[in-house]
Amino acid sequence: MFNQSVAIWLLIALAFAMANLPFLNERLMALIPLKRIVKKPPFMIVGELFAWYVIVGLVAYAFETALVNPFPRGWEFYVVNLCIFMVLGFPGFVYRYLLKN
Image (cartoon, rainbow, N blue to C red; front, top):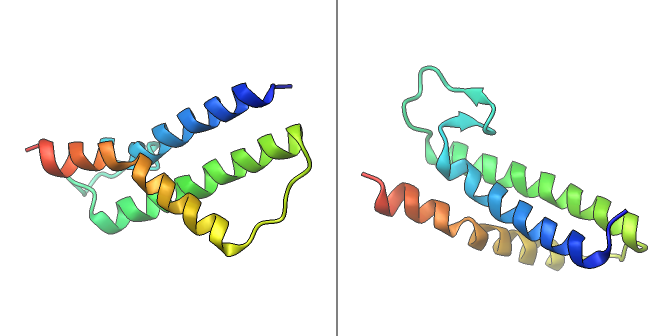
């Protein structure tokens, strides 16, 4: 299907895009328009960020099972990945809260 290098770069690009998506639009999960809300509240952005983290994690697991046998992971792996995902979303955070008026 893919070679490993293409899958890794595709996953990094997907994670970067999905980590910034909650900050860059006013729709729920980038699909559902919020009619009564002018600006998304922070708790909704955090919830979307976590939902996109889970979706990207499932895509990563699908890539891993397609390329190699899955390795066992502990809770530390998921915490570190969540932190990396939030760091990838930093440009969207800066744009939404620090640059945009």
